[in-house]
Amino acid sequence: MFLVRPSKIFLFERLSRLLKNSRGEVGLDAGSANFKNRWMFRTSRYYGLDKNLDFLKGGVEKYDDDKTFGIYADMTRLDGLPESSVDVVVSTNTIHQLDLEARKLALVQLCRLTAPTGHFFCETRLDRNFSQLLEIIKSRFQETRIIYYCNSISRFYEWIFERDRYLYSVARQRPVRLFAWFLSRFEYLTCFWRVGNRHALIIGSQKLTSRRAQAFNLSSFPLKESRIYDMILSSTH
Image (cartoon, rainbow, N blue to C red; front, side, top):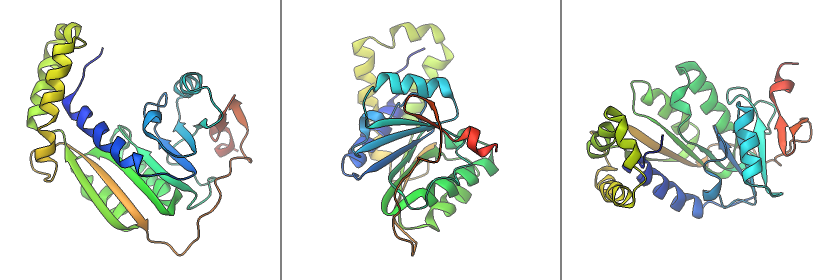
């Protein structure tokens, strides 16, 4: 079922603007599904990482080019990838779906992969574990920014549709989509404070490391499908 969410409109507007200025050779989309964020990346190469092979297949079919690849992998088990080798690391709608220990492991791995001059973008919920997750990122980057979103206005609008599912049939209509966009403007007024919001986009830059950037190399991993590298098989051996 389709619903244009004011909170998501705001998130992807902000993220797309940030990624427009975050370039480099390698971009990693952790928890990429079918490469839902591909359109925002400005890196020379894009790697969508997910443990759902069907999603990855859909992604490489949709983006049939020599600059887009899939990585079949568990976000908590990325030790085989070179440290400080990715210019732009992004994770949306994924981290908060893991249990707490898996969240911590995934964040440590994604921070480890981020290049010294790279950028890390992580979207997650503002739940009781948020402070622990934020501390992991803050301890690894000199600069950390937080953009809060999903305010009470957006939540109420989205709740109406979730309560009355039959309304989904009108969600694609242009007036409804325009109204959702209008409501998303209020997110720009409330994004500076945690109070009243339910989600956050954390941005880490200027990584705290003495290591130099390394080349991102997947040659040691077999191909599961065309342009999809298999780290699941490798991690079980």
